[in-house]
Length: 106
DNA sequence: AAGGTGACTCAGG
DNA sequence: GCCTGAGCCACCT
Image (cartoon, rainbow, N blue to C red; front, side):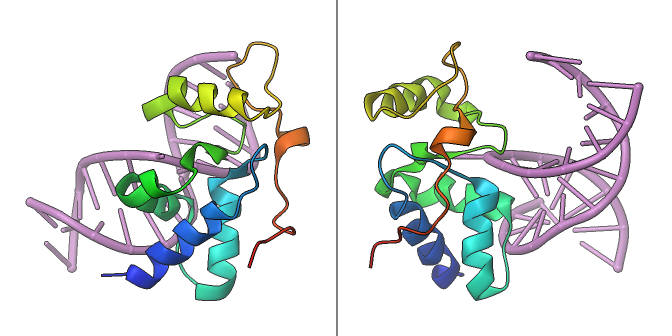
């Protein structure tokens, strides 16, 4: 199996700084830039398996919605680390919370 | 080989 | 703002 890809995704997610978020597409792009494969859906697939080991709640859809399978839980966690949410609290304010991938930890 | 499915995304109505 | 349809990548029947 594609352990390499899975590890790359989990690593990328683990590097998202607290208080910020990335989209599935962003993660897929960072991983894909190196491995030349995968896509947003693959990122989701990986998180579905071993996601509990990383801050999965910092990965949201392109329009700032949190993953539907655990939306409530995700909103709690995001709010807890001060991620800017829209007034209704149902979506993340992408303009202010989106991580650009530059402050990578080594 | 062909078709279905999904923690996705983008453009249209 | 919600629903569709098409595009997408990998995996399963």
